[in-house]
Length: 257
Image 1 (spheres, rainbow, N blue to C red):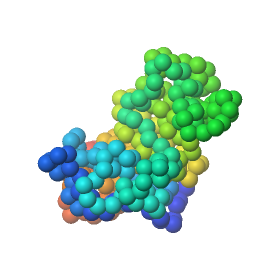
Image 2 (tube, one colour):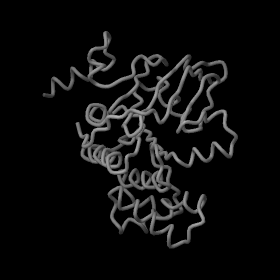
Image 3 (cartoon, rainbow, N blue to C red):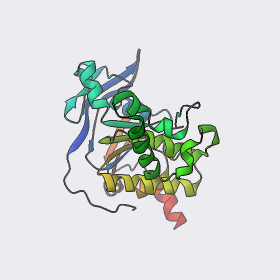
């Protein structure tokens, strides 16, 4: 495991209870419940189309559940007035799978978008803070003036990660952070995620199908199968689960060893 620090006190920073989530008449989840503890790295696992991303969308204000509650930082977010929900939203960060950088902006300007929108900071302060996060995610200073079209896939991910962090959120959501990366870059991203959690006390929740990430950096995770949560816990607990949903991954890793 890549973990450096131990976080013994477990306080939920986000919790979903008895969610029903549907698109029209098509029910995706019924009575889904899970929680994410403060300062842990939590995973949403499952096959393509299983509904794992839909669950995360209920936490990042993209999909209102038809029934149930979603609590973030102690607040039932979907019952809040819009302006109060915005206050909670600004304490969360989100990185899209493919970065979603603005093609007409430089890397530094991309990172500073949220600061320009939601603060009264001077231009210099915005640039200084943006540069701090650019360096924090492992990009070099020279990348600041590049445009997204000039970046490699890994650099785009890091720039998008810096943008997600620029408001110093308490919880960071990542959608397939290693998707499209070569194995070396993927492991570097894993190390960066752990470093951010350890150095900032940040909570990280991520949708992933990357086997190495599952075994090396996740503290806990849920597994969705056939649009139902079939497991929530850690690797030790899933090994003792009667029908281990990760058995094939366990077996493949044994073969590699």
